[in-house]
Length: 242
Image 1 (spheres, one colour):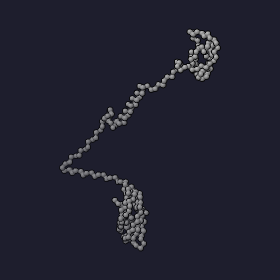
Image 2 (spheres, rainbow, N blue to C red):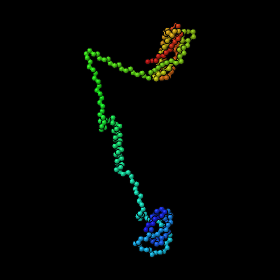
Image 3 (cartoon, helix red, strand yellow):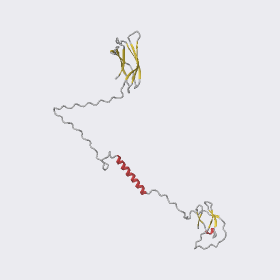
Image 4 (tube, rainbow, N blue to C red):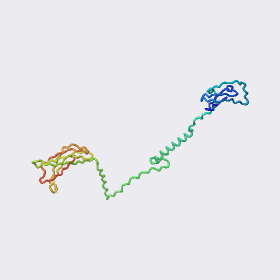
C-alpha cells in the first residue's frame, strides 16, 4: 500500500502488515513529520488476524526501481516549427520589399511597376549658316575665381630718419605677409611728394630678402642718398616677386 505524508506530500510504499489493523504512528523520512497511519481495508481483503503490538518506526522512501504514481512535470514547449518558418518568411519578404522600395529610382526597369528611365534629350542642332551669315565668335571662357592663396605684402612700423650732415634718409620697419601663401619681397619703392602732396619723383631699390611665410614678417632697412629737392613727404611701398 501507499501512504502520503500530510505535511510534505511524500509518498511511501509500505507493507500493510507493518501498519497493523489498529494503525500506528509513523514518521516521514523527508520532513520528519509524525502522524497516525491506518490501513485502508478493501472489501476483497481479508481481515488481518495478527494483533500483536508493533513499535513505531520511521518509513523510508521507496526504491527508485519501483513505480511511483507521482504527478509528472510537463516538458517545456517551445515555439512550433511551422510558426518559426512563417516568421522567417515574413521577415525575408519585408526585407526584400524595403530594399526594392529604397532602390525604386535606381532600378526602374527591374522593379515591377517602376517608371521607365528618362531618356536624355538630344543636343540642340546648330542652325544652318548661309553663305552671307558670319559665324558667331566663340564665347570667352569665364574668368577663374580669385584664389585665396595670394601673397599680400605690406609695410609695418615704418620709420623715416634723416642722415645727419647729408640729404640722405633712412627708412626702416617690417615687411609683413598678410596673404595665405609664401611671398618673397622683390623691391621697395619710395614716392616723394611736395607740400601739396604732388609727386616729385620715385626711387626704387632691389631687396635681398628671404621668403616670408603666411602672416610672417621680417625687418628691412633702406637708405636713399639722393631724394628729390623740395620733397617734404615720402610714401614707401613693397612689391613682391611674381
